Image (cartoon, rainbow, N blue to C red; front, side):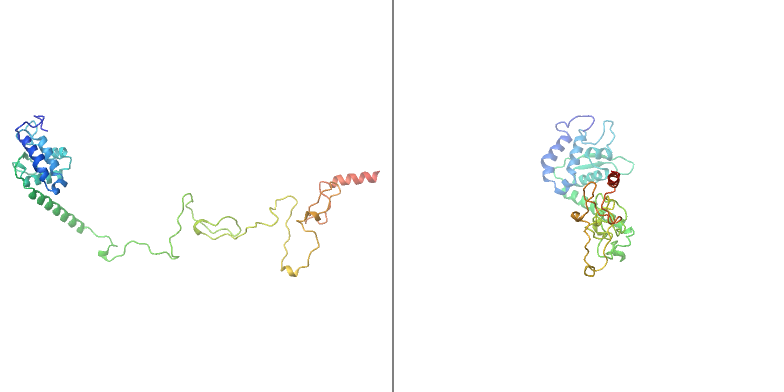
Amino acid sequence: MSTDEQAPASGSVPNAYGNALAWKWVPNMPAALKRAHVHTLLYALRSMASASGELRFGDRKPMRIQDIARAAGCDEKDCRDRLDASIKAGVLRVVGERRRGRTALYVLLPTPFPDWSAAVAHLAAVKEEREAARQKRNAGRKAAPWTEENGGRSPELDETENGGPPPELTDGTPEAERGTAPRLSSGDRPPNGSGDRPPNNPGGFPWGSQDGAEVGFQPQVVGRSGDQAESHEPHPDDHTTWPVCPACHRRVMPDPRRPGRTVHARCEPLLATTDHGRHTA
């Protein structure tokens, strides 16, 4: 809106311009001009023009392209294209010469028969000219060495030697190099099949842990079972065949380190005292 008046007065150029714009021009305007927001620019010009239809400030200085673009909500390049299209259509005219360093004066022109086709042709020619300039700039750029124009190969990785991509680490898996699994280890197989699988030892070591009380290493029989004579010695697991301690009357667990033991180590002092008392008596 101009600085010297708040609203177009009745009978003024902006008033007649606004009526024609709202009731005749916009309803009959081609869709290409609406997509280009030419009607939005015309509404902005109508609201900023003085009573005579000139785009001037209160100090009589003409409005610059920057000022009009800010009011129309677009950049300067689009604003200039829309102004030129409006001039081609006959709804806007320029007073004076348009040149660099000089602000042109735009004036509303409420013509009864706008030439919208000329405005559409102008915008199409501008678009085609800019597209040709863009292609020319792109043609001057050096193409990448792998493009088809240069006969090169696209930067694609060849298939791996083993027929598949390397395993991917899942969330929570440390990103460290996996080594070969130890030969004598138990546990699950390493994730994603990397590394060697540890030997299968579901039963663990015989006779439980080596740290157990009064249980030593049991010798293993080498050779086929049929070549060995049947042993008549009591089996270590059969506690009913264990000897009974004469002091505490409990079973004595066989100990390979002390074969033939029949008395607990803790009971030997007690048994010695008892035997000594009997001899004394």
